[in-house]
Amino acid sequence: MQLNMLYFARLRDTLGLDSETLDSEAATVAELLAELRQRGGEWARALAAGQTFRVAVNQDMASGDTPLADGDEVAVFPPVTGG
Image 1 (cartoon, one colour):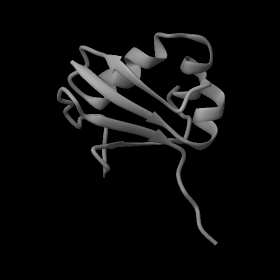
Image 2: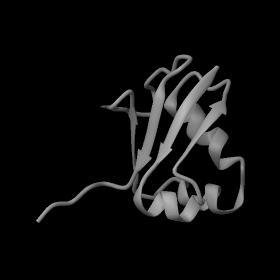
Image 3: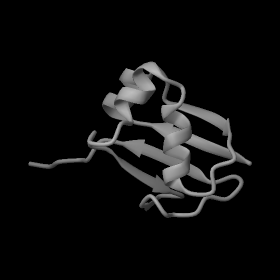
Image 4: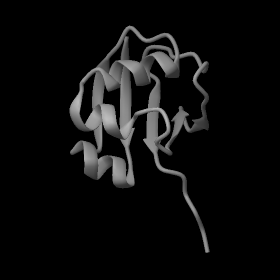
C-alpha cells in the first residue's frame, strides 16, 4: 500500500525531507515506525523509543495500534507547545 508521509519541525530537519510517498506493508502505526527505523542512521535515532514525537493519521491523533490503509496521510511531528 502507499502512504503519504509528512515530517514536521525538527524531524523534517533531522531526516532531510518534509514528505514522501512510501510503499509499506505496515498494518499499524507501530509497524510503520519500526519500518522507518530500519532505514538506520538518523531515522533510527529520531524515531527511537524514548524520543518525543506524535503521529497523526488523516489528521487524527494516532497510537501504535492505529490501523493504516492505502492512501492514508501519516504525519510525524514533535509535540507542540504554546505560550
